[in-house]
Image 1: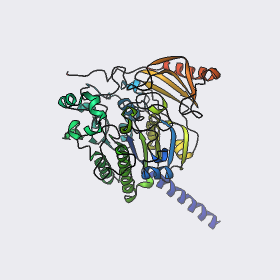
Image 2 (image 1 turned 90 degrees about the vertical axis):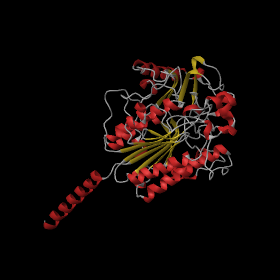
Image 3 (image 1 turned 120 degrees about the vertical axis):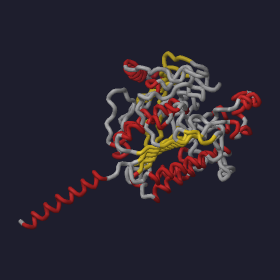
Image 4 (image 1 turned 180 degrees about the vertical axis):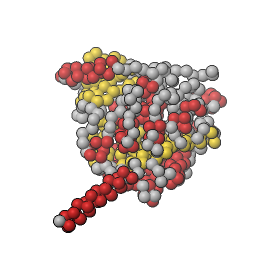
Length: 472
């Protein structure tokens, strides 16, 4: 009897100690690494034959490679708004039919009533940093520190902006400047580098910017290793104009574009090494993806969508399906995931990880990827909606995607066209969107049209934040 009592006491204290350890365990640190204009086919692990990305490849081996992962828009500003808010950008007014992105003379930015990932995670006592490209408003009231981030170091918009008028006139306008790689001189693009709310360098030295972003990330990790942290590392590259450090130039068989991508990968390697050195690698989730597809109009200066059709600016797969890797050794089961996911889903997923309730006062377009990441269960997302500006151009349900409107961009991929009946593709069979099967699958179109009808019932667009530009 005495022995049995001792056994139950031992069992009780063992369980209590285990539960206490679990309750005291620090929540997962979270790092999102967001490339700019990187195509679906631009990593060696996603099929590129000459760009070498060994650190991302190792993340694929140790983590999950997602092959059907989407961004919320096919251009910079709305895509970033979607990631940080978990809402289709049309809801926040961060997509527009007037201008597709914010410019240095834009008046507005992400509205203060939007809840960002940083603000959400701060409810769980995360310390937060935005390092890199912001592009959600460059005026002080719209910068990262006013949207829940404790620290900011980066360029407030795209690296091709702020070209002096004299340079534009000399080079034959924007396209003349940007299409010739000989013009990739930092003085031709007077973009500011901002620390918190203060400009500390103008023009930013873009030859060193990739390395400096990685160094700032490592510094933040080391300074905040004793509390949960969220880092949003948004590279300005490989968006044109292309810049690389002296150490990276000429190293890639893919040329300058490859040099740029490989330097980003090298920086990721240093970040992962720092996590391991600080003993944080087993308690950190790292997500790598891109803000949209490749800017193919720039030919060798742009990337590749691999087997997908078209690129940046379009609602074809090449514009909105992006290479994505989740890495958390010991936390997520390694493998290849071919279910649907989106940057929109990071809001719900990270909220669940941090134990923060979702806001009840707004419509979210975010799904929890946690069951698939951590338990290998089926994902909750079975559909995806493709917006261009404020208009819904296409919708996916299961394997099938219907195009109601198609439109190219930058003089490529065709003029705007409305389709009745819609074009229909089985993306599991035909990711290149070559074979329209609408005639043989009317029931599929009916199901997708029902999905769209239901979605539009509850769609309330936010006031357009992108339309106002110029001198106030």
